[in-house]
Length: 417
Image 1 (cartoon, rainbow, N blue to C red):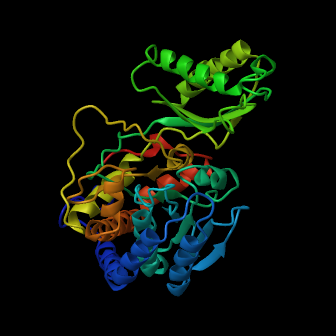
Image 2: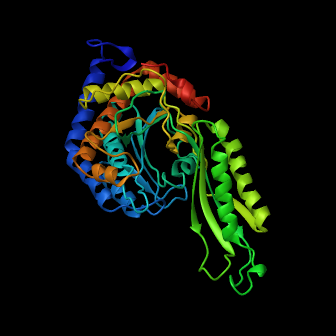
């Protein structure tokens, strides 16, 4: 086991050991309320930007724990911030709580919310003695809307030195090189002219045909795309009834690339498919972004190593040591934008025994059961361990404070375990 600042077994600072013990005891004391929070969110899922009850439950728990809570800051009614303590070092913890349409908490944001609440509450127990502040950021609309990007742009992270969260998945992943894809999402609207499909089809301009042609063009494009590039979409509006030439169709699409630097070029190639379909059918077309771009994830190596220490020592787990080529999952997260702006981590936390993967009904069942409860407490303990390690390490905290004072400190700030 490696302690803060790289001190080996027997070389840890007594103050750090004592503070860590008190932080973990606070999680034990709140364990029932944390798992209750997770299960209550699971039983009452709310989708992006309407997570009013979820945000209210989280705010109430943090107020009970002594945090100063702001509800609906940054012009986001379902966002919140909760702060405790003072000092130049501020440890941020991000909480997500939006669910998926029709699938509920199939991405485990109920687990994320409760785990982050547990980490923040535990760190508050030792914030005064170690001289740091804790800030939990309730970030809405991760699944669609980019709450973290909006909060980042509006200053929510300006006073945050480092940030943490942990996301449920099929297995523990503490490799700091692991990453996600970048994604851009947009709506495409074709506008034509309605007419009777049998009596006077020649007078119509068929927006339905434009939608079909665009999808065929995208399908043809896919075979020419590099590995790791993805294009996906649905038809949201396809016409009113069969005897009317459709005058309006709406498609929702997304494009993904391994890195943010590749995203604009793919988005333009796909946009050309829609423009070509409009030209061929005589329709007008508009393409409108529906959320900020999500950037690929860049984990901080030092923070991830401390999180891994906690996962092993305080949660009894055995995550694999980083080995082989780095892993890039096909999913995307707005936490990627945060990791580009400041030192931050987004490890994946396994739901022990789960048989499904995120965004499936099977996974939704696991996030609301015993495996979800175990993940809540494991992630809270590991994040608390990492936070205490940072606060107790004068050299490391000075390093991160200097990075933030210089106006950044994203992925290059870590120096490994």
